[in-house]
Length: 140
Image (cartoon, rainbow, N blue to C red; front, side, top):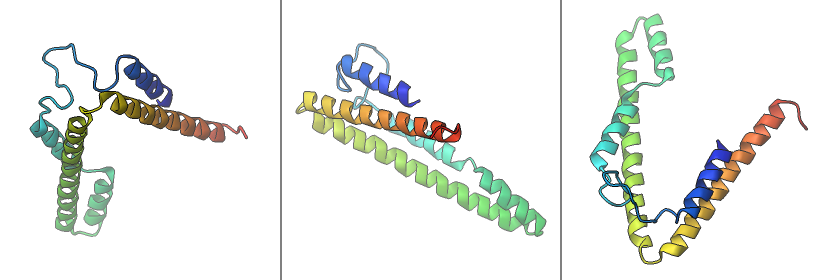
């Protein structure tokens, strides 16, 4: 995955970076009409899906004959996760929009900073994955 991300970051830089003018019509482009409502809806629904830990809580509550407490705990977890993922999605969209608005002043610097951070992050993921693979396969 890290190698793929590194190659993608290099290709993005070769195409002109993140702020290159778009040629596709009908697609959502960064900073040009991001559908915040759709992002928030998806993040809320994703957060409402209970995690596997909720099944453990429900099984424990059934075993203790307090089904209502297990259901209440799962509902509380789902609402909490839904709110959390929605807030993170909103913050990501808002910060991306603000960053793209501020970067219009100097697109070249922004593209280079974006490319360097992308390549370093992707290479870090690749190196971490390689280290985990080597340690699990007995390479020292």
